[in-house]
Image 1 (cartoon, rainbow, N blue to C red):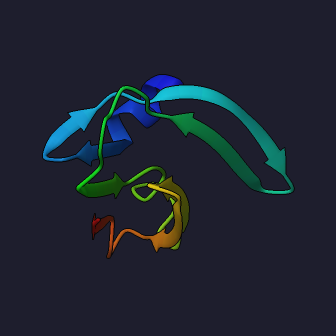
Image 2: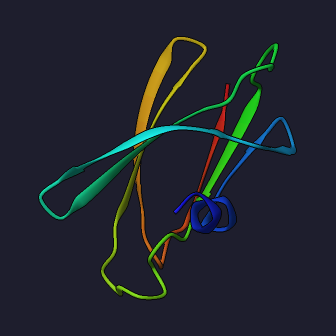
Image 3: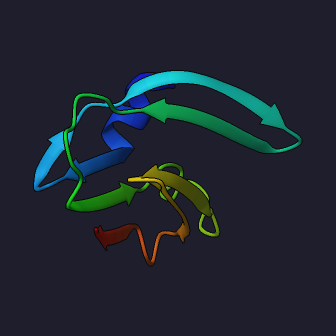
Length: 89
């Protein structure tokens, strides 16, 4: 699962792709919840989230992404038609 997500779930911070530390996962009914963390960043100015996990297999797949950056929490739903979200801080 870690290898698959590494190629389908990518975060770019301040213009650079950053590796994520996989913390854990849990299952709720037919939902898998994964927790990641990125450390070693002084200040986040921009964030791009690209998530194509399972969208080639399940046409109506929705990937809910929740972030906490600079004390601000945001959520977005990414799909096959909309796999990327960008934020400026």
